[in-house]
Length: 310
Image (tube, rainbow, N blue to C red; front, side, top):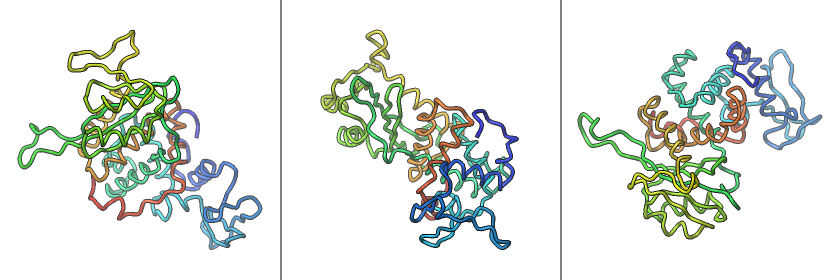
């Protein structure tokens, strides 16, 4: 895709062009079998009159396949041009987009748009296989926040549940977020030590849950928000990076989604992490990175819908 966004591009309107684009993105070295991994002259493109476009056959396992096999798009009846358009809209919307907005723009049902977005959020989850954040002479900021409505806005019934989100952000690096059941030293320790190198300098606020955890790192600095201290030592001690991340996340929740169920919160966090981690590339390049994450992942309808729409 071009570095800059051009909605006149045929890949957003023509399914053949969209399929060819996906083949370039997912198969940069040419078609390869998603089952046995062979490529080159062991792959044959089927071109019979009764064969739908984009089908290949592996000479080793003798199975037919297309570019969507083994991805979140496998066996989808949604036109590929709509998949590519949805990836573009999600990846280029800094504060995200609701499924209602997507279904109006694509001309699909709300249910189709909702499940399409959740599949793309599954593709956005790029934590697996990544190394730890931070390292020698690097700073990792840690903070927690809460997602959910305010009790004063509840007209009746029980107050809305607040869901705790914990995020680590390496300065000038990547972010990783997760939903935690509660904010305790034990809960946060598991989240921190599995995602951040202990050679890092840990930066947090004054919360007591970080006091003991900080001793496991090369260094631990704090700022005292309760005393209106937000930065000190010439700008080194602060948690403004991770707080900026939370600002974008909450603008998406309150301005676009309005409600996020606990069962699906981890997928919304994957989307937020993905956009932050790919902030240095253009709106035209980011969707291709999102589509590349679709490989090797399947999300069946009952998996995404088991807790209802959100």
